[in-house]
Amino acid sequence: MAYAVGRAVGNAVQRNRVRRRLREAVRSLDERLASGAYLFGAGQEVLTMDFAELVAMVEELVGDAGAAR
Image 1 (spheres, rainbow, N blue to C red):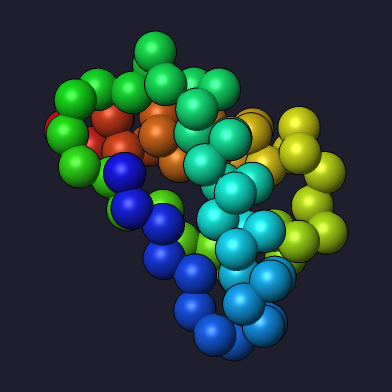
Image 2: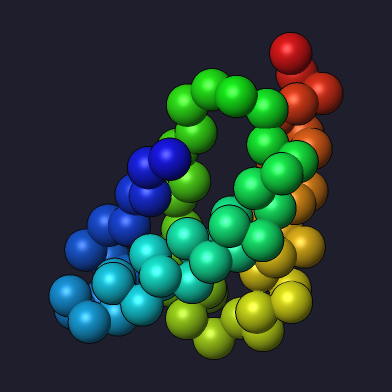
């Protein structure tokens, strides 16, 4: 797993918070992930997004990636 969070998101504290939130969202879906390499990117909206909404978005993206195979 890799998490790409650019400087446009904010300062280091905000970028780290986005990474932590993404990591936890992905962890909740861990058993559904097919083996392989994943790169998750995020913008500023993740800072204010409800966590349940973030998990649903990550789940949708993982499903779309699996369908592309």
